[in-house]
Image: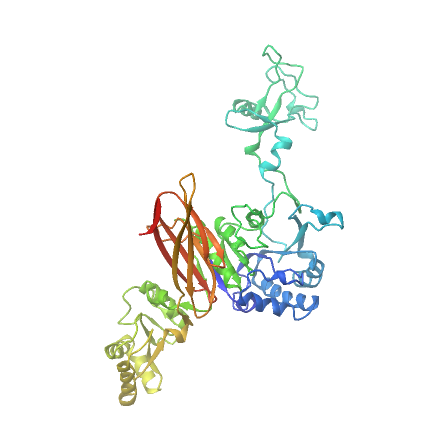
Length: 565
């Protein structure tokens, strides 16, 4: 789990284990039949858009139904699904997809989210201000927790008193019993009991009194006013909020000045996903978003200590989501991986050797030994036990082949001789490339001793590509009256796959070596920023159409003039 995967969600879901997901939230492209639906504009998204619109509403429903059917298979019996859509196809989605797949009896509600307020178009027609989020479960035994509004939504209406001593806002509520209770009919500190008695027993009244939770009416001279009744003090910060139903008007859409805004037009607010995830899952559960988009679902799931899985066909969607996760990661955050169509040659070549061995053996279809140092000169084995050796190197020489032929025999002599007789490989060597001497030695062993050693290059197992080449140019623009100097940065990048976008970190830490994007999505590679006097590290990241990236860091000294350090 905790994976961002670039690819077609249908193909990927078909390979996933049944009943493995606790919660699914999907925000698929709406049936708007408009080109503005293409948001990122990269090849994967355009290809998906063209596939959806090869027909009308029937084709769209068939396209979505095929995917929702897989989601039903993936959900655990206790799981839930929330499907976000708008008015263009919400009725068809409910009737022809969700009712058919999940069953009408598993319909749990239609959340109506008011995402915007009325604008001038409301003067000419009835403006649509809401989206629909269909809520279904797989069975009657599903995870659910009541939903409450935030405190700030109820404070001004109901909690109008403030004691100004740190407890904050409170309200006064009736302390009398709603029904006749003879055992609650007792005087309290001189106050006569209400007609039907008090709401609490004496022990509880005493506890509330000791905690300062009872308000006693007083006269002008400060003495108790026994003609009035005491009331219960309810502090706002001790309440859950107002219990909510399916009409959600208290969550604003992502505004232009919002801190969470990333420039994704249909980005959903984190508060919306937080409410859904908290209502229908537990810590450690698996949250799945098959249309990652701007990454809000996985970012919130990660914050709430859920495991997660996200898929999208857009390189930009995956990489922006990755950066959003990186921006919030700390020492206690769970690790995550990003799976792309191609892998960075240089990154794999310089990866931790033990981690690389384990990773490449698993992708080759073998089982790594799982311990450093190997086992008799081997690092793993195939399912039939045939040994595997990994060399995280290029141009492997003849000595590696000679030594491995001995190691393979020592590893399992019986299996070695069996494979030798049946003209099967006695072992596999995985490396980035092999020299001429290694190839000749493999041929000699086969011809003279019938010992077959299979040489496998890394790019035969996983597709490889070279990351972009990147450089930065700087130019001083101006200095303002506050002593801030504005600098223009221009990123210059090339890649065989083509550059998709740039991201910038204007406070890059040399110690942490972690890129935390200040600007996530820059199509042009040109930015300006103001700096105080001193030395500053600025990092830019270039991402290509394969999702591979390069990072370049420039250190500038600002002191009247700007110079690279």
